[in-house]
Image (cartoon, rainbow, N blue to C red; front, side, top):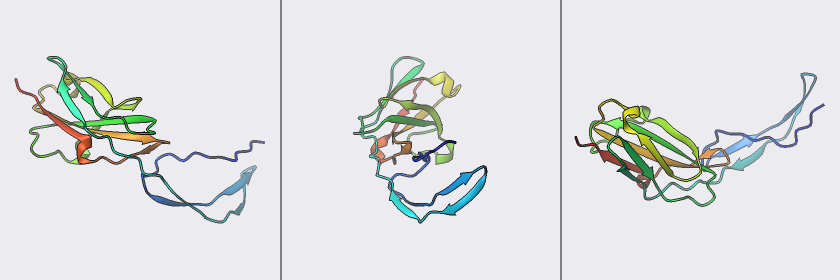
Length: 145
């Protein structure tokens, strides 16, 4: 018999409210359902003062300020034609996750063959909850030839 008095739920949103109910199982037979319990996920602060710079001819470094109580960080980025207009959110892909500080070096040739500009977004993560991005969580680097 396995007794679980605690359960961690990932994928919750920063600042959102949720209602939970529990059902016990014994040999795959469900027991009664508990009363609802409400909980609000604490807000995770955004990463501030994000900077993106070349660190060599073929690589770049993205960094930002540490967020109090953050357990890890997520860096998402996209290749763009210009720094003037941000790409659609669907174009962003993950370059790094689970980092202990908002600092990451990446190779530009791994991002794309012929980049014109690169845009990054940093997110702080606490208890599996990703914080929101503020305007200061985003940076863009124009790549001149």
